[in-house]
Amino acid sequence: MLHVKKSKNNYSYYIHSNLKEALYLSMVEEDKSPWLTIWTSPRATIRRIVDHDPVHLVLILAMLGGFARALNISSSKSWGDILSMPVIFLICVIVGPVSGIIGLYVYGALLKWTGGWIGGQASSVQIRAAIAWYNVPLIWALILWVPKLALFGQDLFMSGMPNFATNSSLMSLFFVFIIIEVIIEIWAFIISLECIGEVQKFSAWKALGNVILSGLLIIVPIFIVVFIIVGIFAIL
Image (cartoon, rainbow, N blue to C red):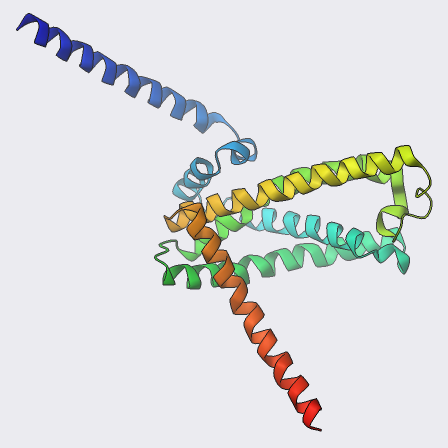
């Protein structure tokens, strides 16, 4: 009998200690900025956000994310071949945030709609919060543009980087930046699946299906329209 009582006491103490530890860790996590915790704990972070204030910084994050994507597109598409750097930045500052807001609502509507087909439970507000907050890694990556612009300038937006193509040291450094950015893009995509999965109340793999379905809703109609137009011209 004494042995059983002791075991029960030990078990109760064990449970109590773990509850205290969990509560402490939760309080510590609450004090951390979501700008940091989204990197390593995307589900817990987005859950905390949607439970407390699902519209917190959503529009700002969408605009900054749109600006970051506009810069990346302008560089990868070599806008500098036909435009000066000030004009490129002006376009990115205007078009980027606007496209970010449009994407927030259009993509959010598609994710909610298609997510409902596979058991998603998120509201429109929660979906938009998930979309906005997975922009955080891309926004942090904007810091990389400071040394990149200082080192490469206009060449960042030109095909072949003509002024630095023969400088092996600078080109090697440029590829280091590319590798870092690719890693951030991949991590941002993983975070997006975790955030969408959390608000929809399903796994990251199911969130991937949600994303694919949303993409198909855009691609398939475009493909059908193009197919019809090509068919009409072929007949004529």
